[in-house]
Image 1 (cartoon, one colour):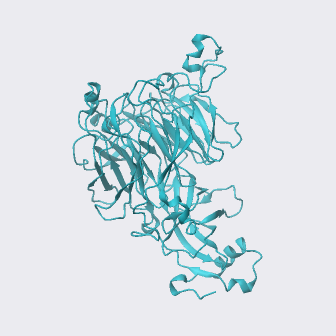
Image 2: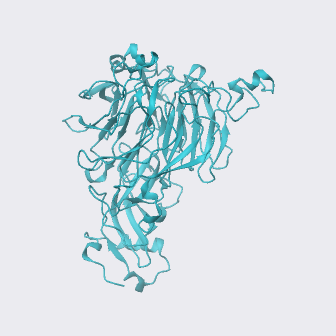
Image 3: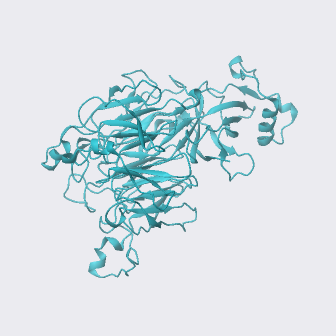
Length: 587
């Protein structure tokens, strides 16, 4: 074996005890002679520039997974059991799954009335990624245009909806044995929440629910005291376009590193201290005309947080939306061109300015997802119109890849187009294997498959990014495992070190990173609670047979990473491993 180069040696002093513990943990049968064959590697961070395998010209591929999921993927959420929850609205008409009983307990028969009754059909499914199959789930009230957040134990807390579902709180606890189903709480929300957003907070496993149609307030779930009500939010009054359907529904929510809540609605944004119910910052208005929130329906992400600044620099990105007057124009069958502009703004510190740039083409009704390397995938949507039934035209068939670290003017790449239009009520989710699940599209009040511009879409697809191509397999970290301190079923405590092991067929590139991704609840162009952290690597050791042991450091607090399950990914020269689930939390 040739001697390692100088750059392969770890440049800081490693405690011998740490190396011994990690080595013995994963190589208990190795002799002392084998230890001399180890390479002590530099823990490199994510690159700000080129990778071992540049992405230029790599457009990705599309897979058709299922011809029908049975229900529309209007709302989508990936669980830590590697299943995906998808559901639409109970009033959409007969789905592919009949129920024996209605939501009110009445028996469903084969009579002509019951065959056409939406309440005699399931409108939620659980998709098992490993076997590519769905199973129906039962909803007792209508979750149409609702919100959701994962709690620290992986339970999906789902809030609001339409009609009898507008004040309801639902839970789905993934179980792994096909025995779990939706549960509805006896407690209810203070206000009706239709087109609201929700976000998991750093403390007490609480969620804040913000906004909704005719609900210009916010509230917490669960309530701390029996008499606790909602809180009026003047910002939502100020951003409400009454004649344009609101343009502040599904507000964009992001948790800042100081624990305060960033809220973007219409064109404006604030930083809200929830403890004091006080706006502590009012940010500059995003430049340009048009609006960004429902029914204008642009999208937003918080860019990856980085250990190199102790996760303190928080930057928000907002892309696309509809032109001024698009909602009312669409009602008259005039479909105005959407917005091309994207804005980025650092919300921490004392200087705040939107830095603007443009997508290749206008876009609305799209989803924005953070990929393992930290790039942003912009997928689904349309070029003209607004959200609402049959309100959009010119489907956006080609996804965009946005690379935040590249120079201005070179950040967008146009990827492989799909042949399936994903319009209003479409969604997407990043999967642990690196693919992106794409579902839904129904710009109609009921399932409508004929004689319309964009029929109801039940097909399930996956977009396969270029980094999953076979040519990159020798660069791809494989067989990733996570070693918890003690029992493997417990969460890793904030700020503590933990060890991972993986296999590399060739020596690591000079760009090695480790990311932790909080999977979101996605609906109506916004992925709620989506968050990525670039973790600190304390040490890394590679044995002669290709196995690598790395010691990583958990995020410092719940302000940075609210307690819960995250997808941990090793990224080698821009090529990600398959992700494994890790749970961060308090001791």
